[in-house]
Length: 106
Image: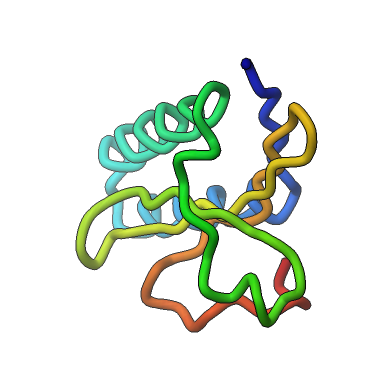
């Protein structure tokens, strides 16, 4: 089955924030590499989103959210999403060093 991937405004803003961080450090080449790599990771959700685990916060939130981990060590991000029918809704791109996500942050 092929899924449609929808990226929320908050997730788009999260990605833009990371790119701005790279730019503030005059790391435009690194920003372009990161952006290409995260889009490649997101593209994998078109075919196999159910391979990703449900996050620990799901129970407290009252609904299932899955995560695709992207990056390494201190540069790891959680691509948080829901599967609704044949659409993957990317809710946030959350740095793994941040606190657990709360309902008002989705």
